Picture 1: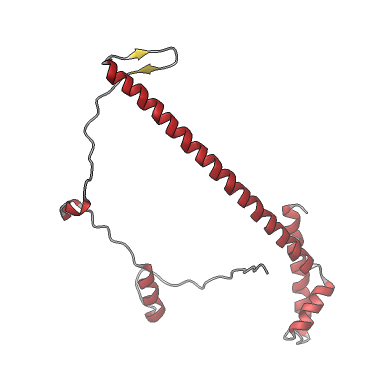
Picture 2 (picture 1 turned 180 degrees about the horizontal axis):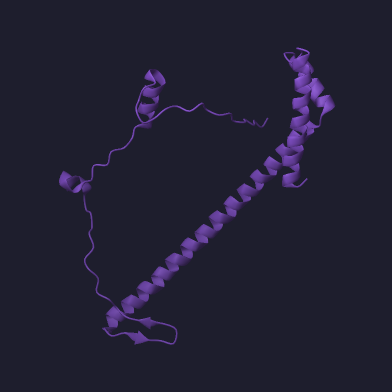
Length: 172
């Protein structure tokens, strides 16, 4: 089944199951879990649609894991290529310095030259640097704030939402 077909089938079967649940509620029979399961399973294809959707989730997980492996491989390859590029660049720079070339060199595809840069800051030991050179960044303690809102319900500037539902899928 195609992705959109699975989603459509689930929606259609869920609507059918909702209709059955309405009938059972009208007859005040909706508190019998075994009756509800049996009726929904016998009158709709909801459980089969759910099974198909679970297979699709598994297939997506397999694809995602495969992509993760490919991405890791390509990332490693990218790192090796960048490291090689930096070594070759450093070798050209070293050749310029050793040979004493100070003017630009024009080649068929590139123009090369050495440029003197400003000295860069190197931190040897952060603990020895005076506090005047540190930024004090206030950081919101969300755990403490959540506890306060849960207990007193009156912290200006925030509130708790109503929460949401979340589907749990356990593999046996």
